[in-house]
Image 1 (tube, rainbow, N blue to C red):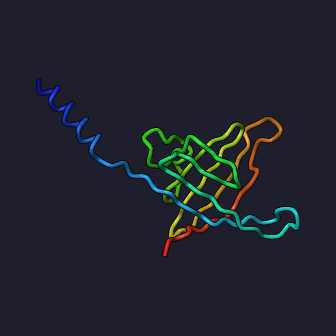
Image 2 (image 1 turned 45 degrees about the vertical axis):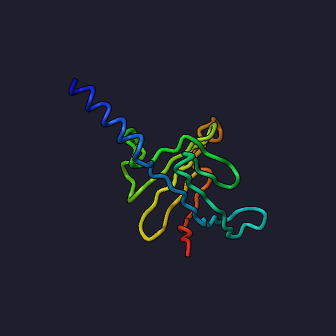
Image 3 (image 1 turned 90 degrees about the vertical axis):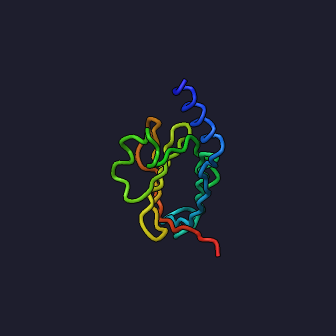
Length: 128
């Protein structure tokens, strides 16, 4: 009986406690991008509710964060907080540091397109 009451109480608490979900927007600078090989700025959007990262118009799903229980080995070297999303043949990671700085890396997992494909230095866009 006690186990049933505890389970019911835990379920009620889980159903009434709002989930913590946020959207983070970053301005990311990429060097040597075509067509003129200069520095360009692109947006990166992390949506923890939808569990996605959007980068250069492509959506990377299955968002994992360094706070997840099953975060895995990828997050061991994370300075502050890290995010990782996937798309077919790609893994996108964003590692945050302090004061809004983050680094972004896109890694290919497809044969002949494996390894680092894109990287950027990013700054958090803060609402005024």
